[in-house]
Image 1: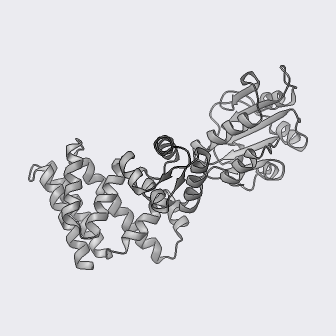
Image 2 (image 1 turned 30 degrees about the vertical axis):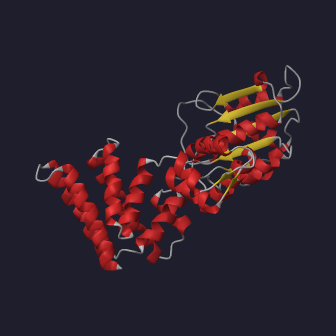
Image 3 (image 1 turned 90 degrees about the vertical axis):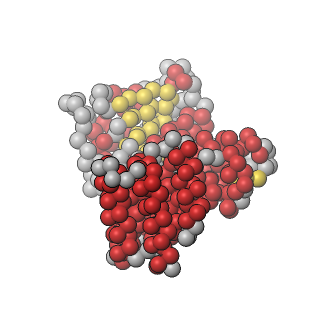
Length: 342
């Protein structure tokens, strides 16, 4: 089940006895966990957390099998549940997995067991993985693609009592990037500014939300790709005024150009954007933006620009060119390469 569907189910008061949360998006794992605690109205003393790094699994299961001392419901959280992956456990603690397998078939009604696996891939062949998929509520906490990010933003706005315009959502993600923790923080700020039943458009986002450095570099490249060399240089000098180091900007520019080239190559191989994100270990939203820009360059141009990045780096470090001037000339070459392709 997706994070969004699970959250909606919890909001309706439907709480299951066993949850299995897996994926690398720790923000989603923490949010679902806190939602379960809040909706189950469990007192803090009845929330018990174990880590399998230093605790045998059977102790956590025994806790789940025990009636709450203070009455009401109990929540048992098991961190580092590695049994469903190919990960090898740290330490030499012995775990009795059969104890959990038996518990899954008849969980205690007064207990809510939450198993957390903060890893990217599951081993579908394992018996315990199959048992969890049969008896537990399985929640996928992997990074969102662009569509799920948009849906999540809509849900967040609805919870906070305001609404986004289409361009407002796009502008927010463009400025902050796809990191949900940062987006959630900015949404709190936007909600306070527009108030109940307010509207967040691109002007409000531009007023309140600062771009991350990575997003500034992407915007710089976007301006260059669109042949807006003057605006790209203005943005570059704005970054210098913010005390950003030219060599650091050069590294980020080279990284973005490398992503463009990789996306073009994988597109030729008929990879989907989701497959590209997995292959390149990038967020799907980053791949989406790169796909939109990469087509403006030919392969040879991207390879030439990557070589120019390396040459600029060498020239700066060997003292042949001033670092500010070197990166500025590179930005102009970026715009020139785009003009030639256009």
